[in-house]
Amino acid sequence: MYTQTDYSGTRQEQYAMLSKQLDALLEGEPNRIANLSNASALLNEFLERINWVGFYLMEDGELVLGPFQGKTACVRIKVGKGVCGTAVSKNKTLLVQDVHAFPGHIACDPASRSEIVIPLEKDGEVIGVLDIDSPELSRFTHEDQEGLEQFAAVLMKHL
Image 1 (cartoon, rainbow, N blue to C red):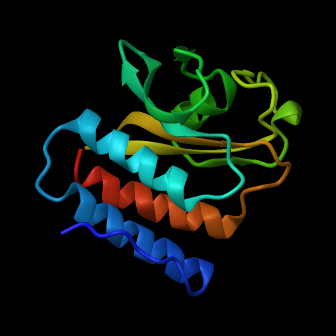
Image 2 (image 1 turned 90 degrees about the vertical axis):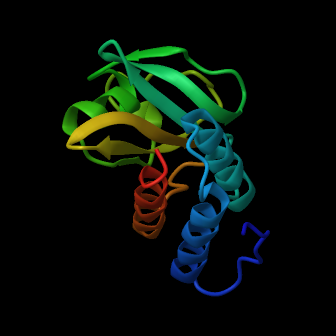
Image 3 (image 1 turned 180 degrees about the vertical axis):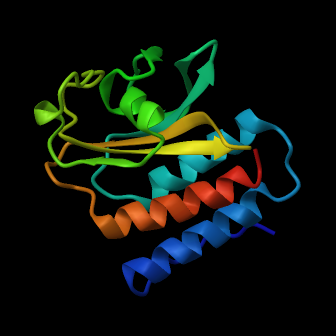
């Protein structure tokens, strides 16, 4: 059963609790859109100093906007373009401390300064990405990366 959690302890312990909370929240729900919507809402509650969190899903060879929390966003992103498309083409997490220094960055929200993008992989294929933006430079750490990759792994059990 899902219950709201107090996120105390070390950052690593907080991310572990967040992943457990996600697992409980999504347990037994087969609908992908519902699960992605709740996952983005949960991250929006948990993460501080962000201005956008959500998903882009692969459709006909490009990323298409999925459930998110934040301002309106770019709807379609080509694989290999911007941070999200590059994360798909490389199939690896990209932690970008300054998006304005990233070649080909797509500025959906000009207030965004840093970004982390985690590919979502199922059966050896990237099916989308988790994308999180912040209005602060260098907002995301390697500790955030590890915790968010753990969160994405739990999420993939429910997609």
